[in-house]
Image 1 (cartoon, rainbow, N blue to C red):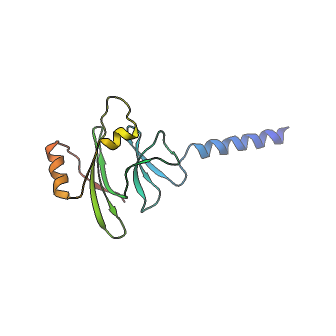
Image 2 (cartoon, helix red, strand yellow):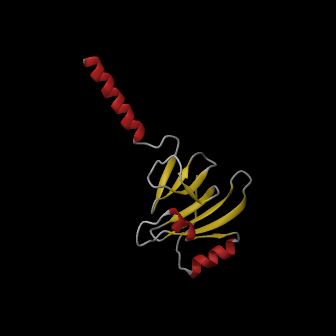
Image 3 (cartoon, rainbow, N blue to C red):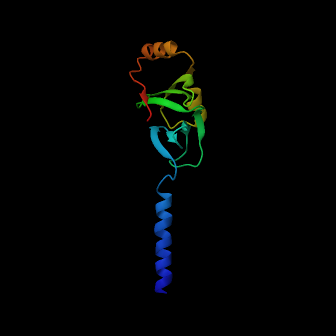
Length: 136
C-alpha cells in the first residue's frame, strides 16, 4: 500500500508540474487574451488564445514578429522574414476594450502597413507613444 501511495504521489507531482508550464513555448501576455508566443528563434507570433499555454491560437499577425511594444491601449509590431531580413510589415492593434474581445474583434481592430513612413505617421496622428523594441 505504501509503494502504491508513493507512485500516486510521484505521478501527481509530475502531472501538476507539466501542466503548470509551457513546454517548448515562451509566452508574454499582452492583454485581452493576446499573447506573444515564441516557439523558436524564427517563429514568433501574436496569437489570440483563450488561456495561457494553449497548444494553438488564432493568428493576429500572420508573420514572424521582429520588433514589438505594447501598453494597455495599443500593441505595435514589425514583422517580416527574419532569415532574409525582408518583407517587413508594420502593425497597430487596439488593446483597449470595454469588455474582453473575441478574436474577430481583435482582428477587425488591427491595421497593417507596408510602408514605414505611413506607419510612423499613423502613430503620430493617433498619439501612440510606443517605440518598437527588437526581440532577441
